[in-house]
Length: 112
Length: 113
Image 1 (tube, rainbow over the protein chains, first blue to last red):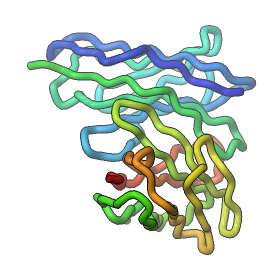
Image 2: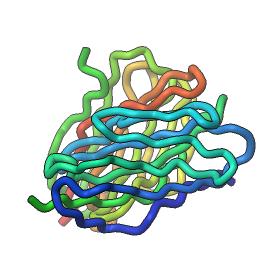
Image 3: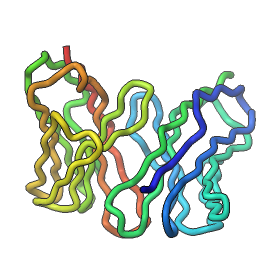
């Protein structure tokens, strides 16, 4: 079945550092890929998405590119801020599928 | 536009008590989901529904029940609460249009003592 694997956390960085959170997936066909963010005490909210190979999703300075050849959707940001501290979830969905498949989440802490 | 609304936000239950977690969405979404998130862990799907009158089990349905009598509402019932059900519960919804994202509620933090 479909699955999503994220890099293990927690990840701790200093402000203005470069961020990469790795995400790889196993799925047949061409799923849509998502990154969600969960700030402390809140629900998940969509950060960005990509629906086909080579698409780049971007939002709030974060980017991720849908790489079919490596089955990856790594999240990157050039300069992180303390306010980016949160848990990040990678997810996929097949066209016509009823459920989203989530990775296990990566907790990110940014120190000033 | 309220999105997905969950009530209550917090609740403490005694072992063996029952309660219903409420979830309502105003986006006319056909798909709705209940997840639980244990401390420091990811999401586990409890139940989901693809439309009024249709529900199905997720990964961890034991100890829970759901119903979907309307498109808007998807309540989660806990019968005979146990300490293992201490968790944060999230409701989510999405349209059945392909490639669309899910929208999440703010969560219900449940403690069973």
